[in-house]
Image (tube, rainbow, N blue to C red; front, top):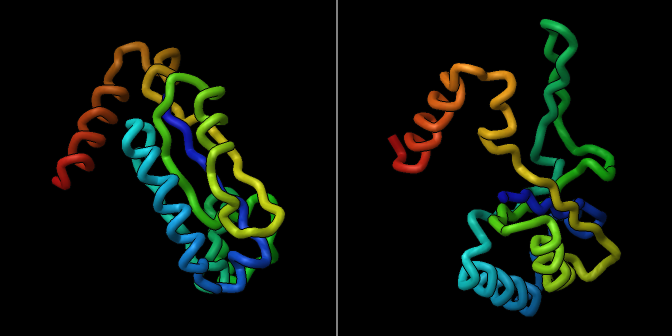
Length: 142
């Protein structure tokens, strides 16, 4: 199972301040453990919302709003992609994470859909085969 681990933004992440050398070393060590265990598939931090934009959809209309945005539970500051055997295993790995901001914060764990989740709506398998081809192109950089 693949999971997206989402670090929720707070005042520290929105300030644009870079993490201390100590925190960078702790996070590097944590990520090394994840890689050694075969759990970590991707990870990254996001700039603050001041450098971002949101596109709101309403039928065929699109409205663009540029940041900064008020920090909320849906504002993401960083992510990891884990591959584990269960949600419980992903939780255990997240519990080992150093506090990413040193403040009160939250990390959300969400399972990523796999092709098998759409089998009911793809009885011929064509959509899943096309998705597998696209995934392979992405993997090899084609």
